[in-house]
Image (cartoon, rainbow, N blue to C red; front, side, top):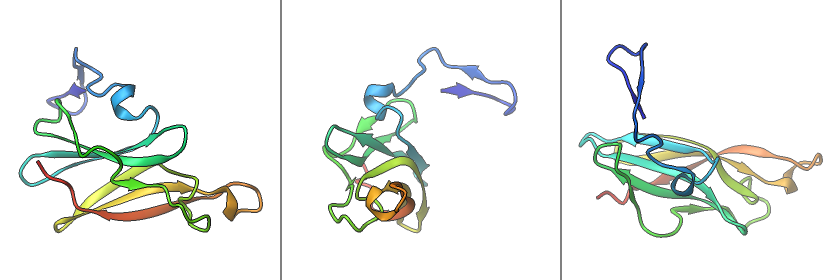
Length: 131
């Protein structure tokens, strides 16, 4: 975390990183969104030995983060014809559409391309399990 009063000169917080690799999900992407009540929401990509998924966290101040429900809020597809069959979440972004969170994430499936690699932009509508 860093703060700035002018957007040019930044001061890095002594508590950085706020979320280290073990809580973040290593190199995977994440979407930070702040709702009208000031609550921060984070959907981040995580990977284990057997699959990848998006997990949810929230924060009242953007500094102290609380894990959401255990497990994934979105898992990679089990259908070998879908673009997110291989992996999900190395790039994640999103926005609030009314009361629905729209999360865009990259999917990977080596079955969909003769060259052995396909990446697509996928979209999920997720209701945040708000604190």
